[in-house]
Image (cartoon, rainbow, N blue to C red; front, side, top):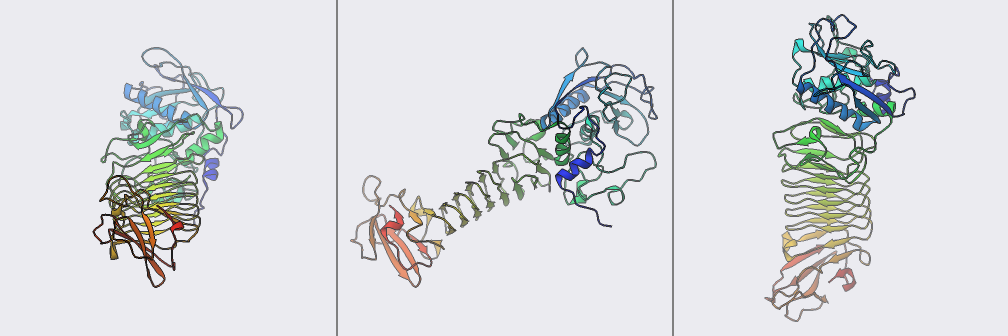
Amino acid sequence: MAKLSYTAEEAGAQIIRDGFGWGEVQGEPVTVTYAFRDDRPSYNNSSNVYGSFSPFNSVQIAAAETALELWSDVANITFVAQGAGSAPWGDSASILFGNYSANDWAAAFAYLPAPDGTDGSDPAGDVWVNRYYGNFNPADGNYNNLALIHEIGHALGLEHPGDYNAAPGMSITYANSAEYVQDTLQYSVMSYFGAGNTGAVHDGIYASTPLMHDIVALQMLYGANYLTRAGDTTYGYRANAGAAYTLDGENDAAVFCVWDGDGIDTFDFSCYRDDQTIDLREESFSSVGGLTGNVSIAPGAVIENAIGGSGHDIMIGNDADNMLRGLDRGDDLRGGAGNDVLNANRGSDILWGGDGNDLLAGGQGKDTLHGGNGDDILNGGAHRDVMTGGAGADQFQFRSVNHSGLGADRDVITDFTPGEDLIDLSEIDARTDVGGNQAFRWFGLDHADGQSGALRLRIIGDDVVVKADVDGDGRDDFQILVQNVHSLTKDDFIL
């Protein structure tokens, strides 16, 4: 029988299906205490946590406190350290951390919360890491760190997406145990199943943050934290979002999901040479750094801008005002409903403005620009470009005679509407053979007077060629082919 496909909201509800949590009312903020055990517990279990106890080392402590912060970033949980010493050592807190050692098939485990489970005699909320299998060196991207984030998720009230749990002799597989399609490590750190089951390729890199469905679930329990990264934040290369969201260079790879409270925010993946897909829409997955489906955006988070790398990138905007910037090798930039800026830079690029009043800049290369709906500005840049304004009053902008060539190398405007659209030549010096920055003189179909700066037309069938000589040598220095118009007037230009 085929598995059901869950929305993010349905998956979040599944992960908190039994209603565990530290608050009495779901959706309300809570304060939760934590400490690191400095002594064995007063209780025991089948894994002999009493007899095999050892305290966390300094690396584990740092990773645990970072993981607590990652969870509190997405929901209204305030963590308060209990205890004393170089770290919060103690045996009385809502969440207590410790190591044990047992050949029990588990890297770690944790107890679900209970509002009154705040002392060392009650296991509720306790997190135990199994030193029998190592797990002493959690770091972003490794399994030890994922296990710690996972177990803290349990301590906060999150369950596995399905009714399964590791135990000796248990066979747990995606095919037999996952209850819905998205029960994988692409969507939730609470899952047991590899991201490849939903088409992602993470190449042994594990999530450094809670993932999309975890964020939804925790926000259902405690409410969304809109104070997190409420300023202008960059994720990826040159990030200011924190270590879990930071890439150090082209050899660094990461799996993370972004929750962001406010501000004008940016995905920067300019350190990579691989072909990438960068998607700014909510609940989307981007494929960056040679991985597939490894960076996602949680519901309710808005990322406005994106910077691609030196490969062939596909960049997809959202309903906000986006800035999409490509680099080399020809990119595909797609704006959304906002007033977007698409800057393609080098390579032969395709730019789609979408709805809104957009600015499209092709840069160097043979580019194709589609303005879409709205009053757009299209600038093909150097080399031969094909520009389609779409609906609305559009401007086709030429800043240099090098922005359009001659004959087969001239730029093409496919859908110019006289009286509505404009061709902007105002930034070109029309007479380079004299001093100053001169504007073009309109001649239309008339013969020029032999001087530089004359803007003339030539009709070829149903098309018009706009041409000009700027240096006075009697030869055209640039031409523009305007298709499907029978004539143009001076009022169709900004001179």
